[in-house]
Image (tube, rainbow, N blue to C red):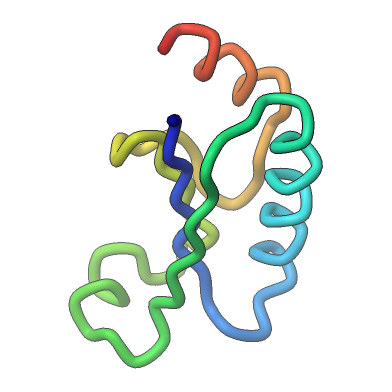
Length: 79
């Protein structure tokens, strides 16, 4: 199964929007979503900082800030 990871912060509007888009697309494309909060994790905050939400597909960076549905579908179709 395809694993989609979203690195997020608490109370992050863009993160909630991106997660919502992923959840809607999951109905169509069937992948596993894992949400990881970077709050309080110095290593993750240094790595992702102000770029959240950061979306990875099978542990490979895909996008940050927003999910473009067409780009996301295309990336999954290549797997």
